[in-house]
Image (cartoon, rainbow, N blue to C red):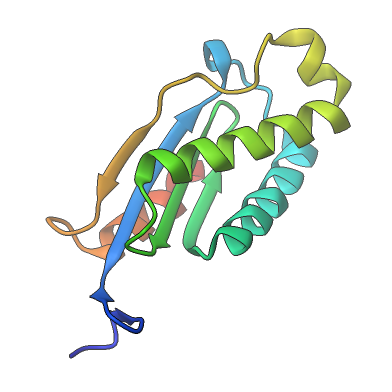
Length: 132
């Protein structure tokens, strides 16, 4: 099998997701210093959850995450855990996020499994976000 597969004791898998979520009211609050901290927190939480982050980009009002998961991880749990963790920490560290918004993130998110389009297409799409 090709290197694109992951192996565990009883499972061979290739589970990769492109997940997007937005700030509450699409407010452009993810300014450069918050962006840097948010990326650190996403990497920290992903590592703790056993996920591999292949690509990420933070825009002023939304986040793109391209992540590889284990078979036991649901997309809903991945999005919820990362959004909850990052919201809690960022709102503790940046008072402006507490005063401007009732919550940092919307309840919703977009998720797409990688399969019908290539990984490279998703990576280029995420990398080009700030160029558009």
